[in-house]
Image 1: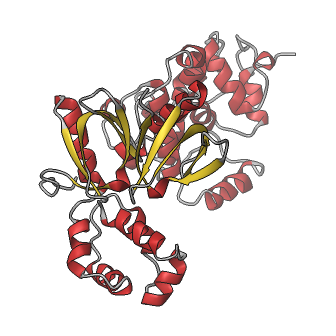
Image 2: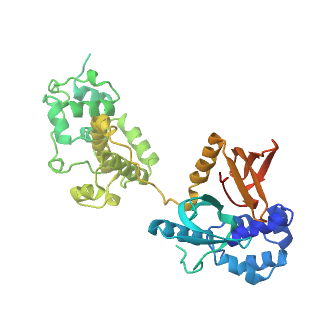
Length: 138
Length: 254
């Protein structure tokens, strides 16, 4: 899961505060919304540290998510689809889904399981996948 | 009533060079037309525009000018160049009518000797429409566009504008350029999930939604947005599911 998805998840489970309230609290003029919608790794380390502090989470957790941006998940599923190779997607719930990617888009991945069932997996639910950090940002 | 070309020109207080430059034609051609040579149709339209008259108001074949007001013969330096150089020189002593106008234009038009950025931009747009390579034009001119004079650029513009007008109908029949103007981000595609949900709405199928906390809801999809999915459960209860809390969903197994 990308840090942007993780931030949105944390904001949701913390009462769904408005981003304005968060950046006022951490003393940042702007950047929360950018961080929550970023497809790529967030480069502002100071902002990451402040957000980790705000949510009272270890910085490593944020860095771990930041190393798995949405772009990399796109690369992974796109390559698997191109090569017709199966993917493994680990969800936040701990469940791992496996199958072949039939399509993917902005918000979800169409995953055909071995039993023929098509699952629509929400991208923000995918926490990890094999070799998640091996991609290069382009 | 059509009039002689030279009469119209003189009435406008323009020299041959000025009119040729404004119309984008060779001064030598203009001298020839004024002496009675038939005006080519393409040049006639340019001259009409430069003189602010209708083409029908210009005699295709002018009567030679009277002795009292003969057009000056072409000076030797006019034989070669395609376009007229600045500063503009009249082929007769400036009249009282000419002088203030010339001074006014020069002061208003900033530096008359240099091509304006707007002219270059216009020319490039025109060439793009016509499919003309800029490098080919530069090679033909023998110097960079930035070294053109204001009037040279104007002359070239006239030439290509005419070409554009003549070929406009044909050029507009070209298929539109469908090449993408910018990179297509993969994440900007969001049609697949929408299509999938729309098919479920139309089929009235029951779909099982599994949430991040492992809760499961099943129902028929009634509608959806980028953030929510509205379903009707088996007991008839309608609920709105927040997509952000969803993990995955699938059509209920038979």
